[in-house]
Image 1 (cartoon, rainbow, N blue to C red):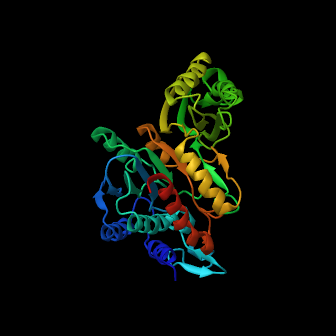
Image 2 (cartoon, helix red, strand yellow):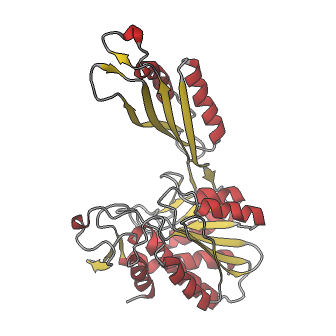
Length: 375
């Protein structure tokens, strides 16, 4: 059994459902200590974060990952226990195999090999792990980034191990992500009998024109490789359950995924201007999930492009698609960020898996990146 496969199995065995790390980071820290890394545990609330470094000064290259996983769902739906790793037909099955305990295991093996081969490498190589990526992402990398900012911690380059490949390992290089902004909108009316609408104020009727304008608006035409900004309503709720009662309140959940044309505060102001223009009585709570980031062409993208071309046999697609990742908290520190990981085919699904052949190639991929940048 290969080193990386063995370590991935050890990590999958730990029931690290967000925000419980379940000992994953202690296992990693112990291995990296033997390789000569300095380790720091940064615990905020119920969330464990591990910061391990080797070397000093700049440039600083960080490998970024998470040890938490989403719940497995009904265990009877899985072909095998989601927390008992199993290899079948050339695939490693288990919750977190692809997202992202496989990448974490590959990070560790690559780091061990790098410092063994280059004990006096230039700059600093580091590993940052959290147990709050799949959850609210409040006390994880977001809080770590705040601590780093306060103490002047420098990060030049960041490689996130999220499963980014499409069909073959290395066929896609993520060079940015959209921002995410969520809203909980409450529209207040006056409850009453449907037969006497003049004695009530229907918040559904009052809100619909404003919602129609919000959803129909073309916010922009895109940015670089980013698609146009999008607003999607995800939930609408009102009423008592009776068909003869005008509700007194309407609640709407919506989310904006936005490109670097915008910052969260500007989008909030634009949305609220539309709501006010329609004269509705409302309250709104905003949650800023993270600003967009984009890494322009430079040493990091060039190194990744060359390495992935060698692994995939062709230059990778360079994309800003997908949802969000913890890199959104590292980029504002001034770091250039990319995402490189295994094939995204089964994450968050029943019978999550990663190809063993891809997993066993991952350490060499990350090692090649480190050698290009710090060797």
